[in-house]
Each structure stands twice: as C-alpha cells, then as structure tokens.
Length: 351
Image 1 (cartoon, one colour):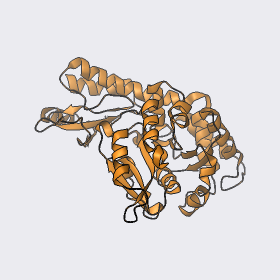
Image 2 (spheres, rainbow, N blue to C red):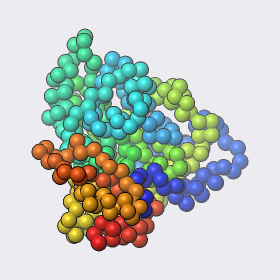
Image 3 (cartoon, helix red, strand yellow):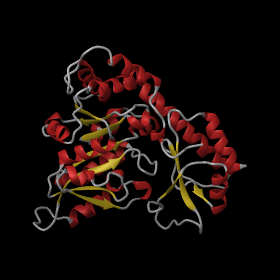
Image 4 (spheres, helix red, strand yellow):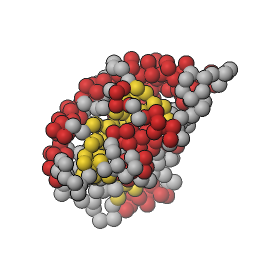
C-alpha cells in the first residue's frame, strides 16, 4: 500500500501507445515535428485561446523557466512560503532567473490571500534601490495541501497585483485534478481569471515525462526558446514529449485519469469522515488526503506496511495545532490507484 506520491505510477496505456506510434519513422528534430505543431493547436483549442507552448520533461524545468521568463535578476516572485517552487525545486527558480528572489507568504492550506499580497507589495516599495522589485506571483493549483483556488480567488490575486503589473504564474502540476473538482473550463481558471503563464502538468497524471509551459500572451514568450535551450530541455527528439501529450489529451483522457484519482482520494476521505475518529487537516479537493494521525494510528499504519509522507503543519488554519504526538499524513492517489487498495487502507485506519 504505497500512497507516497502520484509520481510512483507509470504512464497510462494511451500515452504509451502514442509514444510507440510516434517512434515509427523519421521526423524533424528540436520541436519542428508535426506532433509538436499539433499539440500547440490542441492546447489552444482546450484553453479557447492562442498559446505559445513549450514542452519540457520535468515540472522543475517548467516552473523555473516560466518564472525566469517573467522576472529579472533584481526581481522577486511572490508565492506561498511552502510552495513547490520555494521548497522543492532545489533553488532552480533562482538559478535560472539569475538570482530573482522568492518572497514567501503564509496562508492556510498553502493558499495565499490578496491582502497578504497587498502588504508584501507595500513593503517592497516600487523603485526602491535597495529592495528587489516584485514582478510575478506564483500559485499552485492544486496546492501542496490539496486545496483548490476558485476562479474568483485567482482573479482577486491578479487584481491585488494589478497596481504593480505583476504577471501571474500557475504551477499546474495537478491542474487536471483541480479542474475536475472545480467543474469549470480550463479557460475559466486560467487566462480568464488573469493567469499569464501556466505550467501544465502531465507527468503526475499519466504521462511518462511531459510538462508544458503555456503562455496565454505569446508576446511574453520571446525569451523562452532561448532559456529552454540553455537549460538543456530542447530535446532533439521532441516529438516523444509531444506524443505523450497527444495520447494524454485526446478524447478527454487527461480528465478521466484525474477524475479517477480524485474519486479514490474522496473514497478515503469520506470513509474517515464517516468513522469520525480521524479528522482531516484540510478538505479533500483533489487527489490527496491529509488526515491528522495520532501516535497509535501511525503505529497501526507502520505495522500494516502503509507508505505515506508526514506533512508540514505550518499551513494549518490560524490557531489550530496538532495534538501531542500527532502528525499530518499525506496520502496521494493516482490514475492507477485501485478501489481495492483504498479499501485495504480504510480497513487499517477504521478497523
């Protein structure tokens, strides 16, 4: 019973079939192939908007190159203090931006609030020579605590940043999971709400190694081809990234995979809620569940061989603390998580 990450799942059969098909015969190199051209058009269709799409193999590359394209070395990116770009990219956003600073804000569920953005902008005065100059906001959808920003919340953050003209970046490693929970269109939660650049995640949702950086204003993408090449992510056989997206996006497959993963997470969350003995640190809004585990429950899970991660409690609601000896557990479901596997976990936790 391994619930450590959705990264532990392989690729979906549809993605593997698309890869195998793209592997036949010659094709132009470095993104000049038919697959890459088709995928950019497909992204434009899905998001109902012209896009400039740049394919890379990792989320770290997608986030770091996106932010580097939006900031200067003396700039700053406002984000949550425990966001993935702040805590889990090994300094890559700072490296690829040649030193732009990440300014971390607090927030329950790893969501940042417009009022906190306004305060941060007031502190980092425009034109102050001795301070970095904020140039972008980065939010995670769904967040590192499994919480989802609504379109109204995204728009409010964009409005808070409007006086200084900050660009809005969305880390969408689990974008599909958030989208099926929200029930809105991809356009409504991105460019229509003010998102300028999206890191569109494929790897956590059935791809092998496929991420995309989508610029909703292609004019902003002028530097990106150079930055991607300099970072070593302009693959000579780029069709094999594009083919993964072709298999993933065709006929809504990406949403079906995310819908299944979310359903498995909700299966666990609902069972714990019905049992009443183990409460959740945050609502289950995507494919992750964060129960507060007593010392006894931790021992029970260890005895049963259940693999999960202990999670930070910094983003609990104000005034909320953990009972002595308790930890927050992170249990992640994937497109491959079987109902029977979740039921075995439920039996351990509620038996």
